[in-house]
Image (cartoon, rainbow, N blue to C red):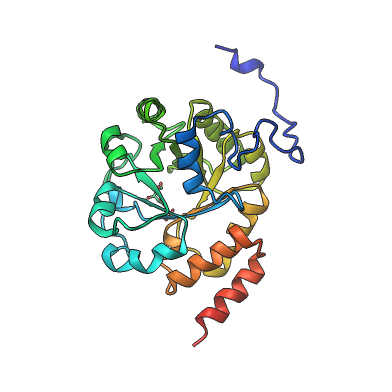
Length: 293
Ligand code: R5P
């Protein structure tokens, strides 16, 4: 292992230089994958724009029935035509999503914590690869806790899921967790996203922060940005716009969609930024117009 004290400060991210080994595929870092992987990634990332709007409603796996997700059977049919991917647990998908849903599925496969735990960083793999195959998952989502108490077990989980997914051509989505003691800085996210990508994750979910374009440049697979706690719609659209400007290939948003008073219009406004190159101001105007009483 390299001597960590002798490391130079990273500085040249060549932000303006496009990724060099993409071949003719629209998904970063996927050119050398096999057909099955590419097919699943194409179900997630729109081939016309290379981007995606993922709707995350997997919160129940550790938060129970969060405000806004009390009735998945009512909410999901309203939203499913307005996003590209549903990110959820197998329990939510099997009970509340009609199998005629033709878009992407990001299946949550790690679990083990709950809101009443002090330390959320200890998880295990809760879904077998066979069940992910049965559910036709386009990717498997694993929480990773870099720098936390549960780092080792979360890397073990991630590696096992990647190894199993590689056997059956199902990509893995590495979700970068932030805990109480983890800073939301570019330095931290650069470290965490790069570790998870080098371990073989095919997509990374992380948070937006200053110098986001450096995180993207140093990460050889696509980054989708997490929504996080509920913001005003205007602020959430700004965060979405800044993320896309910084090189994100989409948003994986939960509370900022389902806790909005107008979740469908919010999902559409995010879609305008992600796929139609709207600025945050244009998307906000669109949202206001659509929700005018
Ligand atoms: C985050 O760690 C988990 O993946 C979630 O439960 C979820 O995806 C979070 O979405 P949001 O922060 O946008 O509500």
